[in-house]
Image (cartoon, rainbow, N blue to C red):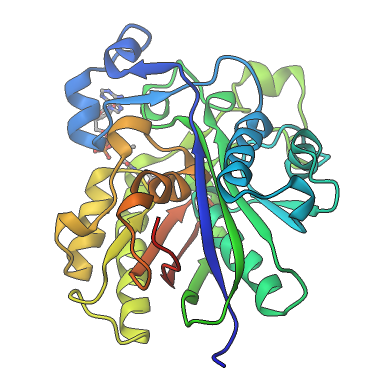
Length: 329
Ligand code: UT7
């Protein structure tokens, strides 16, 4: 009997219906479809009109349970990666459990910005590997429109709303999560941050007037760190696991900028056909990007496929996960 691993055994996404195109944003801020498309690869994104992160997460989880033929009562743990929780507390995971009826589950939120999904996936996997949990749901969700300044053209064109959820179950066939390299560097916080609303700058009329509750990003600086670190960590996990560009089947990269994705794929020696890219349709959904890619590509994935998930985000946080896909759809 081989070592027990945690495998993804189902994936489901949820996107709000409301589509906002680059031309729509060009009516609000001084930008153009041409600038956004050439600098980022984004054509359109989804923006939620009503509801919270938990509503998108709940829809993704309900779809996942229906697909797997499971009852909400079968789930033991729910981890929600998000930087746009419904509230500072209680956790979004608590709210999602209530909305879906997962009354046997405990749960918590995990905050690692755009790396949130891989940090949460590795955390969830450990509960399966320990043998204490048999069914864990990991959600990546962000309602970025709730913290984006639609007067700031440098950030409002990039982000979108969306959610993805995966089910983790034990696997004894050698598939599932094989390895992870996860990193943080808090000195990068000044480049990408929501400055107010926490204990350093509690909300006041002044913080609101100063627009401090919105995402602030020094795009060029973040770009430099992202392009280097995402490529390096992806190459590192390949080398560590004796993987080559031939036997890696898929790269699932965080969807922040097409140029960062291309540089990562190039460093790994991977052709475009092996890279999941949906940034043109959804923009950067922060913790949502990776599960939304897996959802979009699920029908093409085969049991045993070698997959690298890779991300970089605010914090700074970054990392890569190597997993072997566990099922044919
Ligand atoms: O997911 C979390 C991690 N985040 C990232 O990985 C994001 C990393 N950064 C980026 O993706 C890119 O830096 C951006 C897409 C944010 C910006 O692209 P860039 O090529 O780095 O542009 P830039 O910031 O150097 O700006 C170039 C010019 C500036 O004008 P000047 O100073 O050259 O006259 C900006 O003011 O483009 C201007 N600009 C815009 N123009 C039209 C900035 N935003 C816009 C806009 N439309 N939306």
